[in-house]
Length: 155
Image 1 (cartoon, one colour):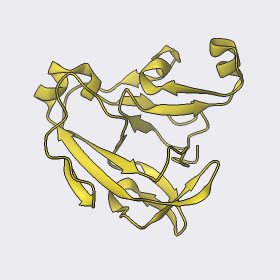
Image 2: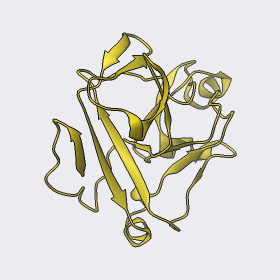
Image 3: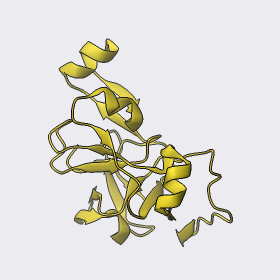
């Protein structure tokens, strides 16, 4: 992983592990307005559901080739099409990334009106799918002082 800020990852993620991340191009709500994740820097403040503006401590990134994605399906992004969970654009997440589902489908599928689900769990929704391993994918992971739900793609 390549560090941006004070967080350094010395080794690549092992092929049998996955880290919850966003892909390049994901729009994150910040104090200064919406920004692409690759334009964020430590000390920027992101908008969170429960804590308002929270300062980014560090950001890391890691890319996977199509060959690496074919070796480990967890390196291939899950695509949440626009409108699936009130997102305004397609959202591409690592399979392990959690998202808050707060609609009637959550109640139907999970028995609760509000639930955190792994992106790969959302594959049970009609239009959600896993991206084919046809090109490189770059993931970004944001480190905050505590676990938070960030406003992403207007979700």
